[in-house]
Length: 303
Image (spheres, one colour):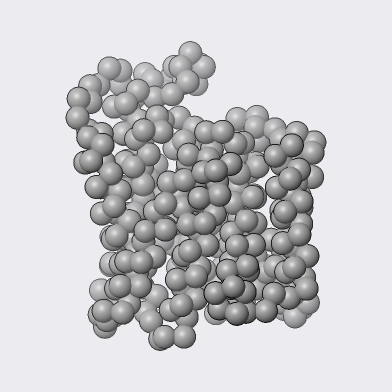
């Protein structure tokens, strides 16, 4: 649970940094590129510092080890194939990470912040459902109550009567839901089959691919480079990396169906509390109720 708290803290810090940049007319693509660049460099530093590529020996072919995994004669990939798995899954996840951001921006314009935020957060249903169906990670009955309370709190914080009136299940918001869900699911896919010592390789691949795509968009849009945008992106990149870093570690001890709703709901709660303490923002009554629900959910899930 400690690693999950650190993941929530990292994720909330990203929101606080974006809130800081909110009214300063910053370019989101440049911030995103700088963010992914820093996350790539930090993960590369971890790889080199921990000498993860040193002494790697190919014991079995990747296909052979996968057959052993599927037959349940082996629980995790070997170091060599864990690196390959990290590069493959991380490379694909990089596309999901960037395009979920792109579609979030698009959805905000078409559907508003409330609906976009709700569907983005509810993307956690994808890793939850897949983990239950594929890996039989069934929560206990009392944990189910906590999970439901967490999901209710997510909807309560993001939705309002006004946003529900203009609700329209259009393609953009559905794509956002899918992209966000699979971006989160990639952490579980890596953790389920590979040695966690090589998670930095997975994160390096994620952020490198996301950076390259983001940089392409910066060049395409002929973005004006501003130091404040780059520095803000650098600041975002650190918690962005550690959000996934600690989430992967938390999945070693918590079922996915428990970790993801608490991660999402806990982030929302911390953002609300931080907004009140740091930015002097008022917490609405429905958000106060949502915070109470998350606290109850945490107690139930940890029983």
